[in-house]
Length: 440
Image (tube, rainbow, N blue to C red; front, side, top):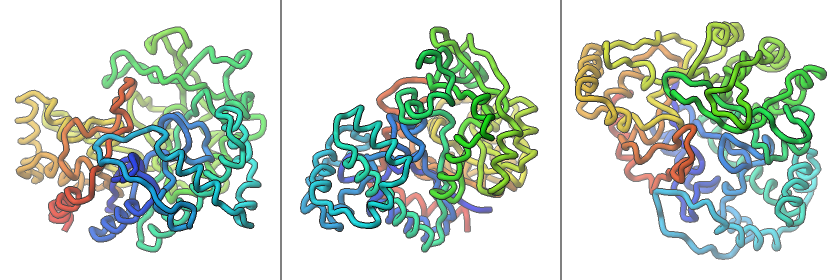
């Protein structure tokens, strides 16, 4: 079994308000190496207002520029630190330092080569029109981001750690993607009549209305889905493995009238085999994990299995505490999680169970030889006994943190979404000692 840990870049400890590609990321990789962890799973790192609403699939989020590494490059001399916090500061604190670094930056051949990329030019033009700064400034930011990311990835590879990236299904409506490629989206006079979301299911009785623009797959089909395939190629260059967000949409996707609730949406056929036949002309199934959670029909499973995609199992969804059984059968071609970015922490989930459910869970774990004094360790141990090829655990679950440390509340607007930050690595390192005992 290959082991991984899930921690978003933004959740890394930071002196400047939000985690970035700086030295804390390198320290985290060193910790992974110490405990023989094979993979680091991160959330989307593209530019955008939130991880799953990117403004561009090619440009990276400017928050992730490391100020410390700008100092190393000689572009800054001094940066004021901010008080440590368990919540991220999404503000313009770093902006003055980016501007200062830009004023000292001397363009060289590598910069000119990078800045000639059409996708970067499109993004810089879009940002310049939107925020009224010169295009070169945004090309500079993206050049620095790409340089810092490549250095971090190379360090991870040198240490034997691979990166699992995340490919969001839809961009934001207010995005470079839509502005430059309107023909590939379902728009009427430049506006959305229908938006993305998810149907009501056992996890959300009201459904979810995400609000993204939907794809015009008929138009994409005219040139064999090149618009999407370019995106996949870019992500495969950037990451070792890609987690495909909302896989269900490739089978059937949910359309919600923009002025209606999620309950009033309906399903439409997706591109299905046509797209994946085109994709697998130049890549292989082992580069992907598919997010096949929620209301999945048999046809979606058949599409997934035809291409041998690695599927996901999240035990918060599969352990039925009323009948003391796991309702989702283990398979080898699978990644098992205690939870992911949309779940409560495992301790938070446990705290939400009734007393009878907690008792049933304890009995279930004892029957499976997984009982530990602390519930998060019991459930990690249960995952480690799976036949799955991968087991991946959020940092919060390794540390046994409660619901106050969850990353996101799906379908709900909250200041606590995408804002949890690890204060430092010490408590995490201490928790890894218990984790080590389980994996040895």
